[in-house]
Image 1 (spheres, rainbow over the protein chains, first blue to last red):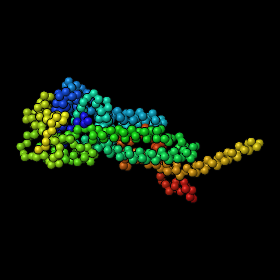
Image 2 (image 1 turned 120 degrees about the vertical axis):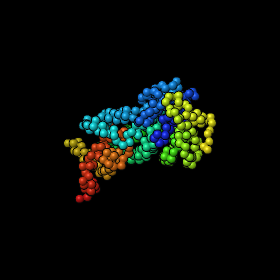
Image 3 (image 1 turned 90 degrees about the vertical axis):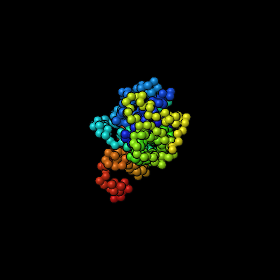
Image 4 (image 1 turned 30 degrees about the vertical axis):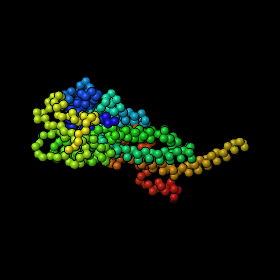
Length: 310
Length: 93
């Protein structure tokens, strides 16, 4: 069941507006919904007019929302790793760890991983209490990076696992031939080897995240009636299909903003097209969100009615 | 006296067997150290500019890699003369 809904698109197309309207309309139909902002520059709280933090906060009777604190996840992860390292290494090997881990905070890939850890935590700890989890994503670059991370890291982990298996095979042979070898003091079995166990654990988690994105998520792309947002949407579609992630719907937001002639690119011809109108008077209250024309989207999502792309 | 003599003979054979075992596993031990070195380099290479997995994976594995790190450091000590190391391992003068 696709019970995670991701809204993707170019910066400024209205991801937060559409995702908060979607989450609110879905909750008002009687489903328990959690709206999650993954964007480091959060404004889901502004759209829902509720001050949010890293834990779910009640917005409406059936709607909770939270804004993921990426800095918290990076710090927590590094702190856990540091403690584990101190526990396993001899005292003098673990000296000056603070400065080392302080730098790692800025290492490439850490922010993308923080998003993945947050999603993993939401799926494990919070999602069972809700029917649907609606994700408002960051602009394209970071979103594509974190969506592709499980597949890329999975390749690395698969190769490292093979190499580790070879190391363990060699250790077993040495210990069998020469039980007094110093190698006998290190782990020789897959079951005892912590590195192998950790690799297996990382692989399981990455596969589960990849499955979540590819099989259990409703990926919806948002465009505006302009060329730039559509060109970027085409690039997102292509990148996602390489990762085995298929788009489920296209949402044209701010229809009527421009009078210039505009048609949706044929690349999206197979996908249902949903339309949200431009609000000429702006969206100043939470109630305004339900008037942007999100209802057909909810119908489509819940499978009650299909809107043809015309 | 014959008992003591028997013990000495036994020890000689034991030592002889152990030397043979060490010789038999010497090459494999060398290969193992190389593999452990490569494994450590692959994981920690990002910190010295080599292609490596995303650093959060390295950080997750790091707490269990003390042995590999020690091998990596000892390997770097020998890196100025890798042919010499290989020649001595193959007993080439």
